Length: 170
Image 1 (cartoon, rainbow, N blue to C red):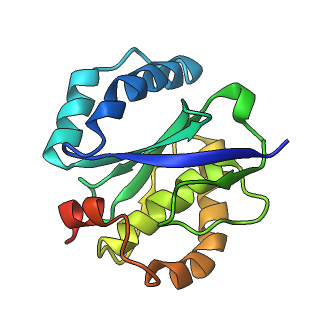
Image 2 (cartoon, rainbow, N blue to C red):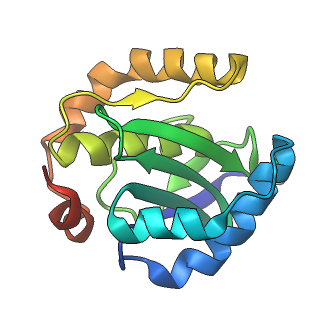
């Protein structure tokens, strides 16, 4: 069964209505990596100040994952990534996300990484890195490096999501 997903953005006041759902996913992420509960107020402040972009994934109206794009670092870094267990490994297609091209055979985590990369590049950053916490993070980084030449072709095709890009253009 192919799931349809859409991506939502949290940055400054953009997407503020998704913040409570993000907080729930963040706590699930922290439990999954056996981290402390974290300080959600700090994360919220980073969003408000424009130091972070959170990209959420929705399937059938429910939040099922996220990735963080850290703008404090130069180059920006694709950070923590979480996908609900029942959606891991499933092929998905994008729906209601016109600023990103559909890819054949992609999974949620792959769209999240692609979206973070595309956003950073469209905002004017020449390079985009990633946090590497463990062996899994290294595999994600290697996959991203292989995909980047194809994604570069997509970067200049449109200048969307325009509301977000207007907030973070360098």
